[in-house]
Image (cartoon, rainbow, N blue to C red; front, side, top):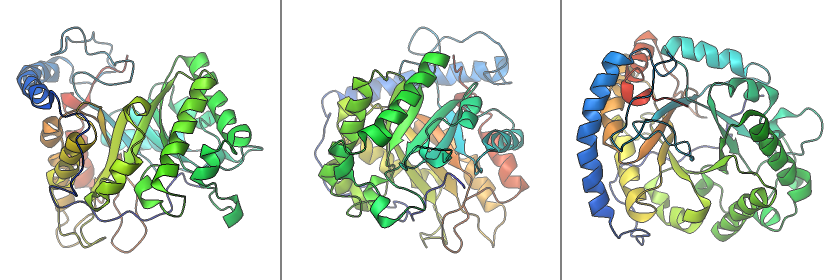
Length: 382
C-alpha cells in the first residue's frame, strides 16, 4: 500500500491567464505588493547574513534571526515562515516504512524536511487499515521533528463502487459517526499530546473529481461541513489547506469550488514540467508556477499563504542534465512568487508513459540538494 493518488492530472498550465473571474480582494492589493517588494530588498540582506551564520540549517541550535517584518523568524499560528519558505516532499512509502524512506530521502538531499506529505482515504477506520487512519503511528513518529501535510480524499481505495463516499453524503453528515468524528478526535488527541498542528487538505485537486464525486456546490458544502464538524468537536490544531491542480483550463471550477476565506488558511497548487508525459513541451520552473500563482493572487486571494504543494519535473531522455538545470532555477523563482511559503517536491511517478517525475540521476539530486540549501528554504520551525 502506498499513499498515492490513483487519478491522472491534467496538463500543466502554459497560458498566463484563464477565464475571467471576479476579484475577491482587490482593495489594497497594489499597495501590498509595493510593501512586499520593498521588504524583499531587506530580506535579501538578511538571507545573505543567514547564509554565512546559519549554513547548517535551522536544526543547529542557533538563535532565531530578526525578520524583515520586525521580531523574529518564528512560525505564525498558521505555520507560516515569515522570512522564507518551508521545504517538503512526498516520498513514496509502504505501510510501515515512512520514517525509513523519509530519512533516506533526507540523506540524499542533504537536510531534514520541514513538511512530509502523506495521503489517506475515507474508508471505515475499524481494524488496522492504515489508509483510513489519519496520523498513523508511523506518521506521528515522523512528525516529532517535522510538520505533516495530510491529504484526505473522499475515496475508498480498493473499495466497491457502493463504498465510495460522495460529497453530498459528507455534507449531509452521513459519514460523521463512522469517519469524520473518529478522525477529528484522532487529530485533536495528537495536538493535545504533542502541542503540534497539522496541515490538512480535503480532496486535493477537487477540480478533477467533479462530476464523479458530485457538483462544485456539493464539494463546497462537504468541505465546510468537515471544517465545521472539527470545530464543533474542539479540534484547534488543523491548518486548513485547499489544494487545486493549478491547471488554468479549470479556472472557472476553482472559483466555484473555493470554500471561502474563512474556511481556508493556505492555498496550494500542483504544477509540473510534464514534458513528454502530457506533451507540453519543456517548461522552465518559472513557466510552471507563475501563471497559476498570478491567477490565484488576482482571482482568489491577495494574501493567503500559498504552497507549491507538489512540484517537479520529468527528465529529458535526450538531455540527461536538463532535469538538474530545472531544479537549479527553484530558489530565485521561488523568492519572486508573492506569498509562496512552502514548496513540496513530488519524488514519484504519474500513470502513463514518460510520466516518471522522480529525480532521475545523481546530477539531479545534487542540483536539488544545492537548491534546498538556500537560506530562504531553511527557516526555524520553532
